[in-house]
Amino acid sequence: MKHFVLLTLLSIASLCPSMANVVCQKAGPHNMHIRVEGDYRYLLLPIGDKAHEYRVQLIEDNQLYRSLIIRLANEGEIDYYVPLDLQGLNLDALHLNVRYGNEPIAWDKIQAVNSYDASNTDKYRPVFHHTPQWGWMNDPNGMFYDEQKELWHLYYQYNPYASTWQNMTWGHSTSKDLLHWDHQPYALEVDANGAIFSGSCVVDKNNTAGFGKNAVIAFYTTAADCQTQSMAYSLDGGLTFTKYAGNPIIVAGIPDFRDPKVWWNEGTEEWNMALACGQEMQFYASKNLKKWHYLSSFGKGVGCHDGVWECPDLMRVSVRGTDEHKWVLLCNINPGCPFGGSATQYFVGDWDGKQFTPLYENDQVITKWMDYGKDHYATVSFAHAPHNRNTVMVWMSNWQYANDVPTMQFRSANALPRDIDLYQDDKGIYRLGVKVSPEVANLKGDAVKEGTSRIKPLPATAIIDVEVTSTTRPATITLRNEKGEQVVMTYDFKAGTFSMDRVQSGLTHFSKDFAAVTTTPLFVSSKTHRVNIYVDKYSIEAFDAKGYWSMTNLVFPTQPYNQVEVVGGKVKVYSINH
Ligand code: FRU
Image (tube, rainbow, N blue to C red; front, side, top):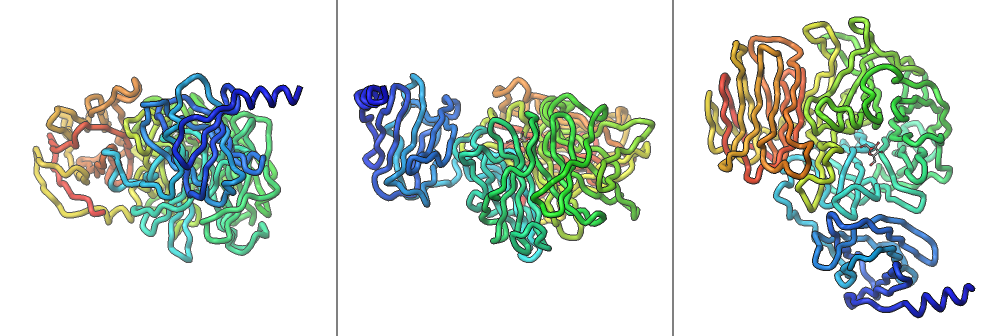
């Protein structure tokens, strides 16, 4: 029987047209084997952005080394190429096994090369926001500040093999100022055990885990048939990681069980972890980062439960103008956003080292949102940020349409970094104060123009500061281009709200959920209000100047907005220094 199968396979095996340095050989009716002839650094794969997803196995010495899912393009339908890195692999003993269907895949366009050109080809590539050079990005992961090197590390959910979600890998970038990012090699790659989902890093200053003093330790979710928690350590400051041999470190038979966030608890002198678990958060403790025990759960009956809770973060946050601190539990939720899709919910309360107790205000636990736009998700903080800052990164998209937005070479950017604190609103309710991180001040270039009505031309990327005075009539700020595409922001003093209307902002056709108006309460009444608006190639972030609210929205104008018109206020436009 075995021989018969082998003979049948051999007889249907045939060579397909391919580049000289790549051999594609049929190994079954729906199986292709791809081999590289010679020594090359990359295999260039033709991708169709909406093509079928095929299972691609890398097999070295008859061992499954990596299992990927790749949208290999059909003939004549190639959108872009991505590089599969072959470094360190024994090419003589390596083949790719592709399982495919009936589509005419462009096998002959697969080629082996020694370099890959990552220069930008996308008109929406932001000027002052972090993006991957190519491929897909979602949540920020594992961020920490290296106190010795004064370097910010940002890892992120990354698919190097297409600009759509798959093959979760931790991409990595570093920055001296949270504004200019250097791309680093991938930190944790999908392997035969599964994909690498979101998580966090800590610096083990006292070597509690035994990997070495100041080892950087990453915690992440291994996502395969079920979700388990794993760890990896780095002895070179977070550049390269070794997966811990004793993985997984936490197992439970729950389908949505992920995104470990770890921090050091001064009070109990142990490590704590928050984990997203269905529609609640679980807390764990450990002395050595390897063995964890369950402490408590939080979430039943409070807050928004319209979706799955993801990416938790628990941090001690100062209350503005006082010596007081409270604990803030970030609880990203998808769906559940007041405007549809994904958003960052949070709870203010207390953490005693074992349990999170939410604050009851007006006899209830009030549902609170960190941002009032549609493109603010997976918010988590940097570990070890200087001066006890609570500095966070935010994925600037929404699962409703993240895979469909009209960029191609890359998909998704991170929002501007933000520092948070707490304040009390007009009703005495504790709310998160959100401001751009102090480093962002360096973005402000020359004042281009100021006025009380229309400013034209507007630089393609700009900071727009507006001051409005409360009257009976609304004040508006309109960004517009020559094509009549516009974004209208409105202060409605009567309603006590600020809103952003992107219904006619440009391209919206890619998702029925994109055209929207988002609205925030002003929270603190005042005679005058100031807003700082950051306009990049495809995003608008509006921050109340006192940090009482923020609003983060994507826009896809077919030409840059080249004028701003203000009714009922004063406007000053600054160029961007980057
Ligand atoms: C949030 C999330 C996480 C998960 C990751 C997978 O956006 O769903 O819960 O770890 O994305 O990429």
